[in-house]
Amino acid sequence: MKKVIFVFVLIVVFYLNAFACSMFTKTVDGKTLVGNNEDWKDPNPVIWIQPGEDEKFDCMYVGFDDYFPQGGMNEVGLCFDGFATKSKPITKAAGKPGFQGILNTHIMETCSTIDEVIAEFDKYNLQFLDGAMLMFVDKTGDAVIIEGDDYIRKSGDFQIVTNFYQSEVKEGEKTGCRRYDNLLAQLPELKVTIDDFAQALATTHQEGKYPTQYTNIFDPDKLEMYLYRFHDFSNYVTFDFKEELKSGRHVIKMKDVFPWLIAYDDFVNLSKTLAIKLHELIDQDGLETAMDAYPVLKEKKDIVYWYPVIEAEINELGYTYLANKKIDEAIFIFKINVEYFPENWNCYDSLGEAYVNAEKLELAITNYEKSIELNPDNEGGKKVLERIKGELEKK
Image (cartoon, rainbow, N blue to C red; front, side):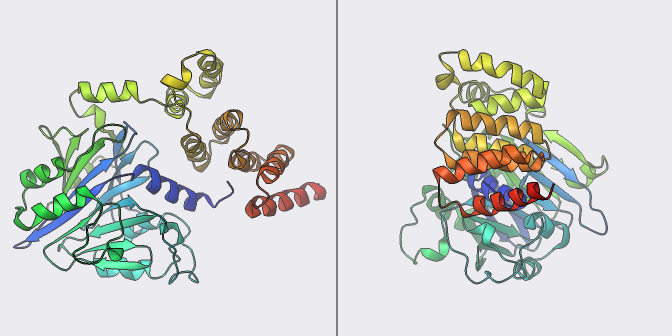
């Protein structure tokens, strides 16, 4: 689908990767901790250190191997994470300019307090948050949940966020989220210690199709992160942000710093989809190897069982490659979606966009025309089609 890449990536990554997460913070006697469970299907989470440039703050991010920051902490103790929610119209910020980039990354590089965070968000159109929320906590324990146009400030000594809009729930009503209610029952008496935070997060972890891939607890005063892997709360690794910065920009794969877990191994082997398999082949062995392997995978009668074909997931993978300027990889992935979902207009729209990026305008036109034939209301596709036809006429 034709979109500005940074907006598409932000929406998709928050909507999918933050499928069901839990985050909370508590401050007592000046001591603040921030805890988070990251629940998703991707078994390849990573940490990366991003030294600041041009007077920007140093940052430590956590996420997955698409390197879109799901959460993080900067050198002055500002922490954040993101959460998927149902769609909520953005109205107050509608007339403001959009931020050209990833706004939460910009916030982490430039802000130190919650007041600064809110002031920065107030400058921009927040349309990208119509199905997602962000929570920020600063070193003092001040915190805010950003619900698109609305800000919910921390009012007591703790604050919790999961995957619903708290502004829409009246006091005394059930939230509909057991993870939130579970934490709400514990937080008043919870001690601000790593052990107590880990125990609380253990009671809200998930298993099954979207398990808790990692749990992180930030200490914004010490600039430390305590990391737990694949909902195993018997073992954690401590990351000292200042020490990690001495090695410059680098990436740490979580699976490389934790012992092997049979539960993790079973999840990886039993939950692979076609998109995950192709992603592995391309990134580990190259595009040509993946292109050679794909026909073999197709011929297997059990491919639908072993490698489920999920249109939205394949589309997400294609846009991940497109965002990283790996256009040939994106075209390969989008063509597979067209093959499996020939009646889905969006598959042709996405492939058309990849061909535009490859400057193969005739192929782009073919796919946009097919997309519009399947969905006459594809106004975005019509505008792109008109533009690229005009470009061809000039040549």
